[in-house]
Amino acid sequence: MSMNKLLVALGTALMLLAVPASAQVKTPGPPPVAGAKPVTIERITVHSPAIEGNLEGESPDRAVLVVLPPSYRANPTRRFPVVYALHGYSIGAEQWIGEIHVPQTIEGAFAKGAREMIVVIPDSKTAHNGSFYSSSVTVGDFETFVARDLVGYVDGHYRTIADRRSRGLAGHSMGGYGTARIGMKHPETFGALYMMSPCCLSTRALGTPDAATETAIRALRSPADSATLSWGQRAQLATAAAWSPNPKAPPLYLDLPVKDGMAQPDVLARWAANAPLAMLDQYVGNLRRYAAIGIDVGDRDGLKDDAGKLHAALDSYGIANSFEVYPGGHT
Image (cartoon, rainbow, N blue to C red):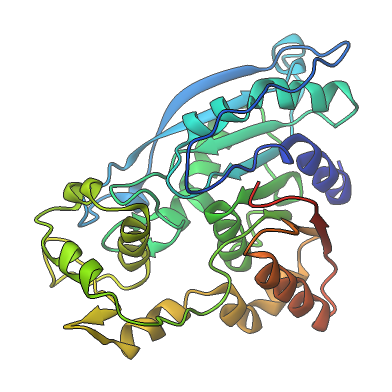
């Protein structure tokens, strides 16, 4: 399968998987498609050496969903391309596929002509609700988990086409960020990228320091205690655990962008170093290796401007990419 066809196929199969990153949702199932054949979902556990020994206590044994196409069992000699799909912040893999009716959506896409593939959805939810698919001694190296450990396991246990030209990486919101981040660094592993409403693309300005948030966070005695915080406070913790880890700062092992009510420019600089729009210039050669790159975002999504900037940055280097703004919000 060519990468252009793979990109179209993964976009068709996954375009309805985007969900609000801040909440669980209930949506109606997609209408039945005549002739759709059932996919098989296997629930497996993949051990990741890259996540071992993290300071936050995240398990290196990660739950993974593997969606096998209808022909996988029927044709035991056939091999398939693979799309790795990354979920967003505050929602795990099981929630994602349940809320957006993944089996029916993918079955319908195949019935409408999308080329059959294996879809792999790793669970990257953490104590603070999300790994940001980054590399950190605090939360673990989820970047390498996806790019090396997970791909290696799937290639070793399923009938894949074990070649970068037959692997796609896709994701929504935090998963779109992960797709950008991992994609920039690992063109040896993946051949196509598809980013849906990607978050966290640009460097962040702190704004007015929030003393209440700082007080609430510093009162925590363990990562698990963050469950008592608001969504926004937990998101700040997840960001700090991923991008400003500190092995000498128990019990959370991270540096916050505010200390004693004052902004910490050094911490914000570390966060900025993880923003794809700031990273892109370093990885132009890697990005040129992709046969297909896609970005989409809703016209009412607060992430629209940054998604447009990513598209423009790729265009400025002559890196072919597709960019779609559709009617809607962060869905």
